[in-house]
Length: 254
Image (cartoon, rainbow, N blue to C red; front, side, top):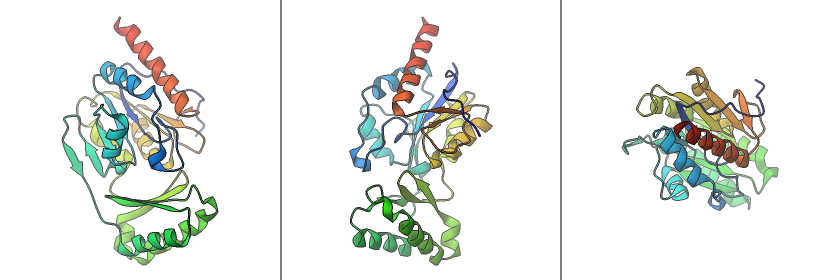
């Protein structure tokens, strides 16, 4: 699908869902190196108020990391692609699982054998980062896909590999950003609003699909094939777009 360069104005009764890395904050060589731009907290605060709380973060990061990045804000969040979910009322849902032992062992062996690779272990999966060693992308994918296949049919039915920005992530098939979006849309204050999903990665396409199927919009940040009907260049462009949405909302309220 061809995306327009700029997204439509944010609907007055939008339910806004935002990815984090690559959408609100520029991607860094390592996840721990990411820095949140100065505009993020004030703009998200204004939008949370004007949208009557219908704003959530949907990320591959754990909720604890999102909270640390956005402190002191405490928002509804889907973390680890929906394996963690904090509802608007603060209640938590968890869908944790331990990756197959053979896959974990293969990933650790790759890191030991090849300096520059980084393994990120999550409560519901793992990520192999090869940003510092792009020459090892093919090797990582071959070894890790083979390890999951060797783990057996039940493991293959439970887990899947997702390509991301300079990394490959193992996640449960039963969780996704799209499913997290469906959960949020079933409850107040999101229910009955027009969903707008903004994300920059392959893992965000499920969320974009769900938003558009529900009569809303998807916005892809950066390059790459997408089902989204709209596109923004980078996190800075996201910031300008959201700041404009704040100005419009304040004008409506005044």
